[in-house]
Length: 275
Length: 201
Image (cartoon, rainbow over all chains, first blue to last red; front, side, top):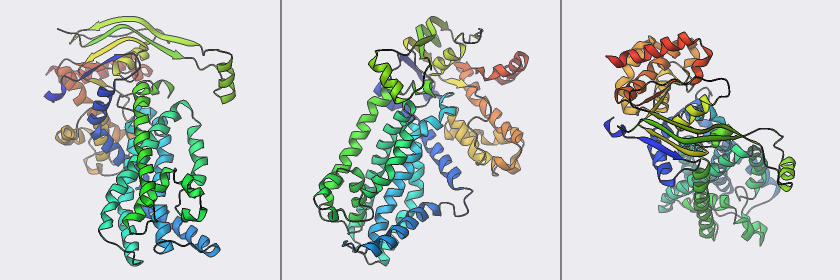
């Protein structure tokens, strides 16, 4: 307690200082962790299949898309097609699910935010962390499937760790920026909802982008491509040139986080005026 | 001794919600150089509160009481001037605001304790006394939705004491929310007295 007695704050104008803002964010890690736990529990507790849905959703998606699509065209993929699709839909489901909820998180969190101060960036981060809790066990299923399909598993498996870090950072970056925009333009959540389907098709989750010839170079600018390819790389089934798309994805992630800093610095203390 | 709370020429301006937020009306407003009308909820406010002082703010509807409390809680930032708070602000938010019906009493105590500014370790130490106060020991691991609403409020109101007590013991700032306004003044006062009683001992 004694360490906390000298806390306090000084506000000059609506803008926050970056230093104190980041310090507040760091101090809120207890709150972040507990809110993430709350969101996770509330999400799955009453469902009969519980957290199995975190695996079931991408699995069902992979199954349906994979079965129907493979009847129409025959894709040349490195490794079995079923594994190719699941390795795509798994990170995609995380990204899509977290982003959809996180975009509205500051608006939804108004009940708390109007009564107590905590850095507003906590709210979208909480959603991403809560989704991560459901994601981790499904990675085990991915590895299991890879073993069943006799993918060339090896030391590459360790790439799952940076792949997950990249996925979480990218999702957090998009979530932070979109959640802030959603406070001012309540259109964001509809824009996100409208973009997910074309985004999914342009992500190379269900078919190899080589199919599209020279268009591939444009689609590679889509950060989700690198996010997914990184997972395939850790199973030893990535297409040639996956490294490039991973770097593009990393650049997006860093860029979005960097963009969110001035955004929250400017609006952290005034979001609440619009809630 | 430096004051616990000070406002220096503080002001808060809000934008009036006076038209449709459609893109077309925004574009029209922008192209005609029309600004949205503003409203100063507070302006040129200077105030100092010394440690240990009790201050009440009375005013008509729209006088800016809530805005001032929001500034003091750090929930919102001032448009102009400076807001300085030394120490922690304990919000007496309406009981059960952060409570989730799907969570158990135990989970709710932890989440809300942290929202009120306690650390998980502090809650560990207080947990038994909080549960004893609420008299729902047997149902502490039952989701709040399956026990009467009033029962879990016991947890909430007991949870509010430690942050208040800590603030007052180190002569910090206690913010009695305007959420009390719906009740009669006497009820509010007795609640405050109840909250403050353990402090004097």
